[in-house]
View (cartoon, one colour):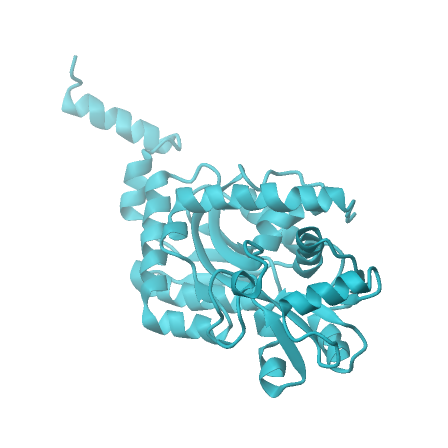
Length: 329
């Protein structure tokens, strides 16, 4: 039985007044006011700069201001929680990394679920890690490095920016993949660790490639391999782990965008379309490449594929964290 047009409009108006306005209608006009992207790190870092590059491009496409707000604390957990608890209307978004949207789930006791309390919009970019060593270490390639580590079990020192960091977990994964053991030396950040490696105080690091590019180019440390499927734009002569004899060992820090759970699918689709268009822009690609970042594959820019990838990453790293008994209060 069909409703009369007047009765239908009355019901529609009542639903809107009660907060039940159809999602498709909301998405049709979206956005009607500024959008906030919450970055869970301090201003000036790689994630913050990426978010600002993207915010500028998105704002032009959407016809609204896109604001970047840095909310720090708890390895990014405070900023992520801010978006988890925000209204699911598309006006508060989260841009974060492997650390903030996977690793902290194994390191901290969270009162939210990283995999179900946020809706993926798109993977944005990724930055492969880089295996680097001090110049005086007697290894010229990855196979020689592995052989040296096996000949000196537990003696080598690997700098990390704290327990549970990407470099710490990549190092644990490297040990498992190669059957080697070494000591982790925690620092207050990558900068001091790189300085000590240049001075020969530590043997090795496995950290985001942008931390080492200038030093490798200057010849003050040596890059052994890129744990990724493709070589770096910035260091094209450094082989991948596949090429260097450790196939399948990959470690990258990646960046993505999420919205609160319950955000209308039409709004997610609109945000995704705008993000995909921005990432296809050559000027945006160029700015990201200068940061040491590469645009995510078109496949992983799709919400469903990115969500599945995030789950795969959790299944990979959480057991490593648990096995190493790494806990942060």
